[in-house]
Image (tube, rainbow, N blue to C red; front, side):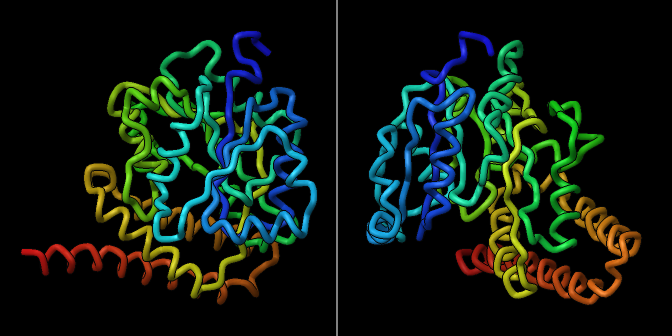
Length: 305
């Protein structure tokens, strides 16, 4: 690894809410990376939940490079909390992770940093998400669809080919170059979802690039029910409607159709035909939630005028 990028160059931020022992497992794995972080900044919502973890798992008190900042539930904001965390770091690179992003191996940080070595245009790299053990075939396909096994650098020139995916980026595990992050004003505040894509859009429109680093891998997946998909996509639709500068010019519905058709084909080819009713129910939950989220913003604007 280039000596210019060392453990003193990178901090990790983990957002937590009701953490369990898996958080301690992740912190241990981060300490064993080929490029370990200078420190791990934990932005924890509701102090009592972390106190409960400390009582259940004594490992947490043994971590010497962790720095904990507590906030009340009503003060949490997807963009604002991450932006606040950046103020606690003096590193050249900042990796944001969620508490359920499990490093696949010891090369996660090295692989996230590698693209930055010879390319000053890159604003952020993001990791490949692999399905967890026990993930449903539907979720396995979702991971394959959004996180292929090949790297991809994305610039504004790719918009014609990739559409909204030009700005796809995930703070489940993503590495930001700090000087560019500060130049662009960091994450947007007061957003219910998509803070990562909104930042990526800003960066690309300012001439920077986004890099998908397939060699950087985390295990992260959810077997959502149709009801959970509905609730999640309310926030998705709402965030897109609130930021037409990002999502208004480039539709995301085309990607949704590709996902649906691709998943149906995957299920049939692999003998999972019996999951088609469940998949259809999930799609319905996604679509209805997405439309409700968009209507929420539209109706709010009407009431204000």
